[in-house]
Length: 431
Ligand code: GDP
Ligand code: IMO
Ligand code: MG
Image 1 (cartoon, protein in one colour):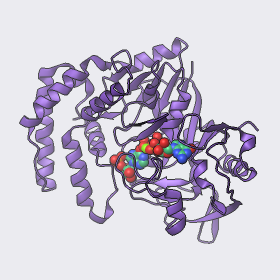
Image 2 (cartoon, protein in one colour):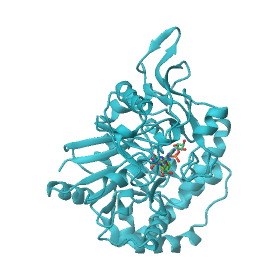
Image 3 (cartoon, rainbow, N blue to C red):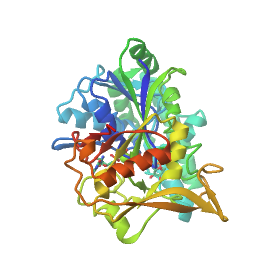
Image 4 (spheres, helix red, strand yellow):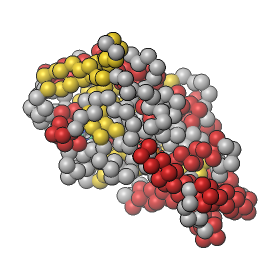
């Protein structure tokens, strides 16, 4: 079978969790390939809402195995807590249901302390990271001094490496940032215990996924973060430290340049961003309050991982077109269409203006968007509540028109439109 990849086309929180949940029914494996517990993927099943930071959303299906790929950075504390959370919800979590790549890197309290110290040192130029230690863990990986999952297999060596890691991090914490050092003696027994508990889950997950695919089984790759947070091609430096792109699914799962069957781009019907960085279609005031919600509903725009209010704005067609291209998106799912009900007009940014010129595409990627001003197309709004709609024909004509314009502007077809967080609140686009 060809690999299926699901990615976010914006700045994250597009609704990847719920889309993966929807598409993974019957899949043998769902695998995360990038990032760590900076991700927050929400899946609502009846009265239960799962907030997953590390485990793939597909694991909510009892027959599906979860894989954490080599491209990830894994905080063992979060992982063990999340495994327990699934168990408490009646789902089995054992090595038959979950595997952890030997080559994934570990996040320790030292990485979190460094993340926070580095953010504080940036002062006004803060990136607004999630504080989960993601940047420092990938820094250690690139500097070839990281702790890897494989290191946990030999406890004696692990204890040496762990102590050396904390000692090295303490030098930076104390000497560069004037922060408190960590107590390695206090942390070590705790981490030895995590290592013991996780050992049975360690595997050559690339081999496992390869074997599943060649055996005709369905495997889904679940992206974390969003395209515009890509380390290379996003709004650098306001990005994360990994690649959320579809292309990274292959390297991040330890696969070759194998066939990819579909790349599903998850696109929220409007734009949001949590953390600092450029946002040409950002809105403020009443429109913003409306898009964001007050925080009383679980899906209101407040970060799943940090609780911060998300910045909100109109759909940015220029950035979406770019995201579709650099991921090779073959089909889109538009989420949160229900939230747009009641707005008198729906705005989509179709181009940028700079120096009297119109740009339909970015001349040089999205890192410096300061010269650009959004050029909008206004479409008629609709009042009807969409949350009960289940067929394409039953959507208001204006909503169907909005979806068709997204297809035209972005260049990728829309397959589904979601109208609420529940499993059944989805409409297949049939014409
Ligand atoms: P992810 O990081 O891409 O998985 O997205 P998050 O889970 O962080 O944020 C998406 C939020 O929107 C979650 O609370 C979802 O339950 C919710 N959600 C997803 N699709 C819809 C939808 O169509 N309508 C509404 N109202 N909420 C949705
Ligand atoms: P999901 O998978 C939204 C943002 C942070 C910050 C920047 C860098 O739920 O879509 P980091 O902690 O990664 O070093 O922070 O990236 N960010 C996300 N924003 N959704 C996410 O994940 C995010 N993961 C990181 O807010 O701006
Ligand atoms: Mg999220």
